[in-house]
Structure formats: structure tokens, C-alpha cells
Length: 409
Image (tube, rainbow, N blue to C red):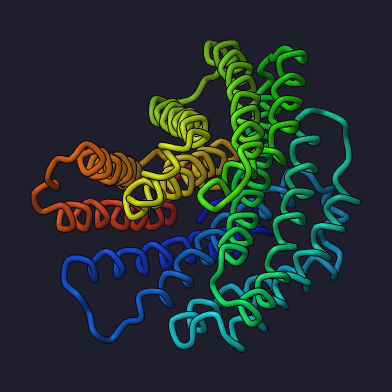
């Protein structure tokens, strides 16, 4: 894979783990259509999700942080090399530990080692990242929210041992996911995007950037209320969640104004522009879904139809927004390229797979919600277009090894 030489291995690891995680997801989808007796669904699901978040999302974003926000002389320090090595090894071993035993001793040890290493890395990054731009603020708050999300992982084991999978257990999981998703990934990805605009001399209103950051940040903590509405909570949490979702909507308004201001200035090829639109549309749908989830009727139906609405939302974020925007960022930083025919087929196939599987998931949920029958051959269709996503990733990955000059994307 192309990119800064010092971080080539890190990006290669991240993308490889992304593909392996996608293969695990494909295996889980195959199991729905053609049940397999030799796999434990929940164990493979745990491996699939952990490696997708940490192996792909976290590793790739750390690579971008080191390449673009930390001075060359500082990031060569031995402490960074040791920490990154521990993180890569522990995540890779999770591909084995979770399928073998699930959330037990070996996996807990790996997660603990990863957690400690990530704290040291977070401390170093917060210390070594300099500046006061909106991009830097987004990055630093993203790291703060990562630390906040990780606190749930230490609490989770105790809850599981002492109480089992109670409401407290599930709400602890949702605490982790909320601040990892809507905290770390949202903040750092938009921080990267603003940094790219800055590098490419694209002019953005400072006031718009500040307002986007302000409303996004103020909404983040109270928006956790939206994640616990499924359990028996006071009506005040519905109010808090609704207000937080409106604040997120206001931040989206400022983001769209920023994009409207920057779009005429960007000199990207048509594929990069398509990827940007795709990721931002997915993010907008995420905000709309969160607003809807503040209403009791929607919460009740979403939990009853979890395989469609909840899974659809998680994939909307992880694939349609996080992964798509991260690919765009890697392209604009010239770490990967969308120039040859193989890469173009790859991104087209990948986006097609995401779009159709998301459409199938939400459509099936809405059909059941309104008392209609299921989509014919639903599981088979989802499986087929899940293959599209995996093949697309393979094509993108393989295309990076073709000899070519890296040009502006």
C-alpha cells in the first residue's frame, strides 16, 4: 500500500485487518442463509466487531495522526514504536482469541494490554500534537472521548461476572460504543477532513468551523441518553436525548455550510467527490436516525426489530460513514490511490454493497414494522451484496500494489 514509508506497515496492517474483519462478517451472513455448525455466532461477532473498530478504524486513524499531526523527530521515539507494536499484536490475536473462547481469559488479557497501551499512546499524542486550529481541537477532543469510552471496558468485566447480561451490562456496552462512535471516530475523522482542506489551501470560514465544533462537542455527552432509552429510565432521559439530537442537527447544519463553501474549491477527481458525498449522506442519515430514536414508539420498535434497525444503524456508521470517509482521507493524504481501473472497480463495488445491504436491512425492518411480509430471499440477497463489499475491499487493496505515480486525487 502506498504512503509515508515510516507508516506503510501500519496502514498495511489496518487494511488487512479490515478485510479479515469483513470476511468474518461475511461468514456470519453466510451462517444466516446456510447455517454452519462449526462456528459460534456470538464469538465470531465479537471478533468481527472488535477488529473492525480497533484493527481498522483505530489503527488507521492513529497512522494518520502520527503522519500529519506529530513532528517527525518526535514520532521516531522508541515509545511510539513499542506502543504501536503492542497494539498491532493484541488486535491481531483477537482474530483468534474471540472465535476460540469469546469474552474470556485470553481475550480479556489482550483487551487489557491494548487498553493500557492505548492510554500511553493517548497521553503521548495529547502531549505531542500542537496547535489551536479547529482540526487540532477536534483531534484532541476525539482522544478525550476515546479515553472516556474505554472506561466502560474495565467496568464491563465486573458487571458480567457479578450480574450477568443485565440492563447495566448492555448500557455499559452502549456507553463504550457511543463515545467510540460519536466521540472518537466522528471527531478525529472531521479533524482529518479539516486538516486536508487546510493543506490544500481551501478557504473555510473560521466561524463556521467553531460553531460546528461547539455544537458537536456540547451534544456528545448528553447524546448518550439516546443509547439507554430502551431500558426502564425516567422520561427526563427522553428529553435530554432529544435536545442532544437537536444539537447534533445544528452541528450538521454548520457542517453542510462548510461543505457548500469548500466544494467549489476542491480539485478532486469524480471518484473522491462521490466518496465524500456518500460518507456525508450516511452521516446525515445517522443524525436523523438519532433524532427519531428519542421517541418512545421508535425505541420500542427498534428493539423489537433489532436485527434490522440496530444492525442497520451500526453498519451505517461503521461502513457507510466511518470506513468510507476514512478511505477518502487516506486517498487525499496520498496513502492510497483511486487511479487505476482495479481501484475504481473496487470502490464502486464496495459502495454498491454498502448501499444495497443498508437498503435491505432498513426496508425489511420497515416492512415488518407496518405489518407486511418479508422481502423474498432476504438473507440470500444480503449475503450476495455482502460479497460485493468484501470483493470491493480486495480490489482496492490489490490495486495499491500496481506501479503508478501518485497524483492529486
